Image (tube, rainbow, N blue to C red; front, side):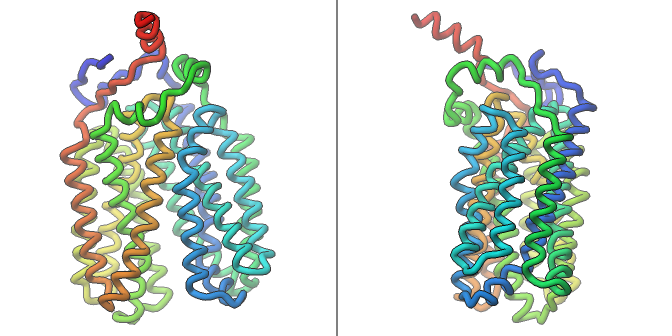
Length: 430
């Protein structure tokens, strides 16, 4: 059954089963954002240590590449299945198990005798994050409404980026003064603390009547859910891919170029990524709230265009200040797209499928983070600089903007039938 079109996205009526306590929902989001920041600090702590750790074990650059790839691949493969589990058994159990598993993987790291064991631990870590992040995004979708969902996604993204900025710095200091194994123990302890916080402070969302009915029946396949807004989901997937692809190109091609051609020091590279992180932290909140007021579509399109401009500026930059400006501009673009894409995904999705759809979109994001670094490295080896790789990133970002302009709706019109309507249709068929 088609829903009547709305005059604007903010006017969309989510129905009686979607009425929520807005203040209580946002308090839960803030708690979850804080938990996510602690978890992400744990992820970030170990980032600057991996190269030194791998070398200390007598491994090669290929081993380091496999270590990085194993994390992304398990995220891609398991994001959907774990998200589906969160639709069935609840968000909180999946997040709690993921946090506990993250602690275990870091203990394995700390005592790993060889690279193979580290790769196993890294794969486990990827699987864990594949469960946590879609469940967290689905949780936010559960406890918010269309009027405050963009702001909520912004807070959640902010928590993620705080860890992105703080974690590597903390890890570098710990490794410098206390050894390269201790940061893994610290990350494990942080994960256990977050595990306790989630158990105590985060409450499982109350399921609506439609969600309860879904659990009593066969859950609608994700293909059917997404086919009802196929054009919009395709555009969102392209936009999300473009958003993460740029960061993947920068982390490989740009950092190599910065060191080889422009003589960047490690501190300057750290400042560069720190600036991006700080801009995204504040931008996520600002643009997330803004999308609640003016709509999602054109903010996503504008983010793609600003991203393309930032990447082009990287191509022509000649000094540190140019690169820092380009990085800040890219941070603005990422924060325009990131929480807004997540919020619009939730706006379009039937409430019985939040977890599975978020898991699918997470797999799209992770695939960009696999393709971007690999392509950036190959193109850098062929050309000797990052210009060609950045050129591809410009095209991809512009394609994300174009896809958003063509495929995203100006207002949300869901075509999903309720389970009562499906059952009525089935009865009539009989």
